[in-house]
Length: 501
Ligand SMILES: *Cc1c(COP(=O)(O)O)cnc(C)c1O
Ligand SMILES: [Zn+2]
Image 1: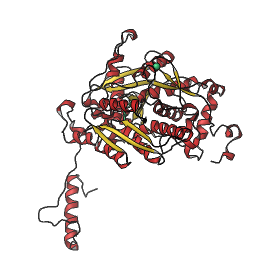
Image 2: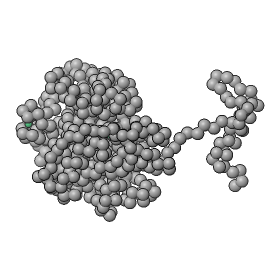
Image 3: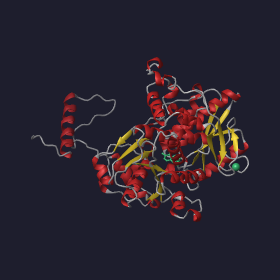
């Protein structure tokens, strides 16, 4: 829709302007630093940073109900920079001019209602939000759009050239970073560090296809992270991990979209998120808190974090109910099918601790909960979801397993509606499905396939002596007809088809 065709009351508001004053705040010593340079940890105490808008209060002059209209009308503008996460410009990047925005089709992913069979199985109605339908097929594109838009802005305003964007990854961060890096042809190169043998073939193919330098390291993600941290402290590189606070800002868009999709009525929602490095759950909580602060939503949803028993440091931390007795200790991870969340020492833990506290203050002690699930539950849940019309990855399966468990344990009140994060596309994790179907899981996963969830291809051949087609060879028409008839009858018999109607 053309700007002139918008109603008068919205016309001046529908295109966002540059505003606000952003700074990094250290979660350790509380000092602040300017965002005119790339900074990942506090130069004073090395704690993680978050981004704050010093002029945030100005946004409260606009009533929450008007903000809703602004975001809703913005959906109709044909301006690429506003097609993705920057529909919510004022909340997650108001200092960026629209010409800095890198838009590759991220965000506004579908919210798909579970059918009655799944709903009855789980005991509550729920939806999957399919973040696997982002351009690199995971939610990481949200944060990457933000981090690269900021980088592009820095390059323009500070004249930076020849920037090397680096990240460590469990697979999806590198796919997203390489994709966004490859779009910015002027002055950005990208390199990604992956744990050797710990990402799926699809996830390895993605950064290779985008032309990034792909470096494999022995060990797991936590080891790769230490190496890029070393690099970012000593060399002029742009760190694209979620340590980079701009990633968190972009990922807040997930919450804004949920609010919009439910007409800003989120009180009965239980938002279910898998936890790995904990950047995502940080962003989800931060996003809802901002909406609440501006009166765009009038109540907060519940948040349910899910971890595998094989990588459960956040679960263990919150298992202690007395806040004064909680101590965070990293765990050594064991192999997990939720490989993208297989992290024992989450970088964003200090952010989580702070936000859980804020969230619980506003919405009550049980507004944020963390559950753990077994590898078996994750696999069964993913396969079950996908047999009911979804495209959940193993982490999406983890969400379903966690939601189901929370319902069984009485933690999800009657009347609640789940919104489960299918964080990546099922195709990226097809290898785990294959292992399940073929019963080839290594013993440490302790996954025993359920026969009713297995599925394998069947090779049907015509009876012995009937000629078969071969590539590149012409077949005699009569022989071909014999082949078709005989094979079709074999298929019909396999499927139990009957000519009588
Ligand atoms: C990165 C990732 C996660 C974990 O998110 P964190 O922000 O690291 O907690 C979960 N699922 C998928 C598919 C991911 O790529
Ligand atoms: Zn500090």
